[in-house]
Length: 191
Image 1 (cartoon, rainbow, N blue to C red):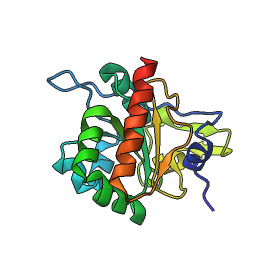
Image 2 (cartoon, one colour):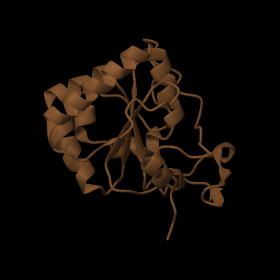
Image 3 (spheres, rainbow, N blue to C red):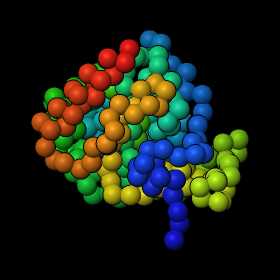
């Protein structure tokens, strides 16, 4: 059975050999950071609500942190999967809610970390030997593993958790809005 790094990230959100990807998006004409890594391979899997509501989604942890630093917004790490039924339900039932969509679009940097991206090769300079897995990590799926999905964690621009526990599948938009507002308040206190 294949071991995945994401299991460790989700379970404890703390590992000894944290992987840092890329240098962050370069930016668009307005100067706002835009995702550049893994976009071609992964953007097509993002839910329709992302396109419909004009949300920007990063697929690289380091790019998301860089965007967070520049825009002074917390990062929502969305651990997801291509074939995750509960992920699609959460997106269609919760993300599509106008209040949730507004908050996600305006107040958060979204990073979608696909736990089953086993066809996406890492650039040679980002492949490494994992002490935790005791093997070479050469594909994105090796880093973003599998666990009950979806799982959401919220961090600041340095990767520090804003909430000790993450948020998992719950089809109630009002609960998610309350959780997001709590995270935003904690983030603002840290500034």
